Length: 113
Image (cartoon, rainbow, N blue to C red):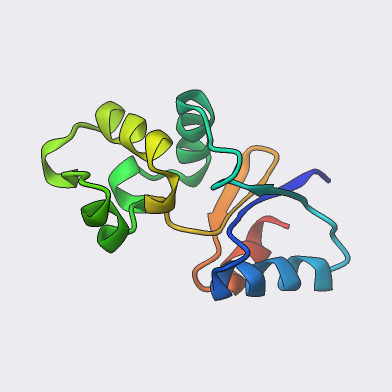
């Protein structure tokens, strides 16, 4: 099993999700996505696994602060904006093979582990 968590250690939900995964005996690959931003291709792949659009994983407050006009961008343009401003991406995201889940609430990732 190859589990990856896109993690922000300053976020309590991200920390809780990581602890929950580790509590299941899984040691995930931890990607601090603010330090190592996703590429557009990686984000598209994750969105496909989540079954979500880019607009569905936007942190609205942070997007506004970053000047991202979510309502006026198509999916590809929004993906580019999120790649350039990763703090506007909802967190954490956990990927296991061809499945992914948002860690909100943290327990929602248990379905893919």
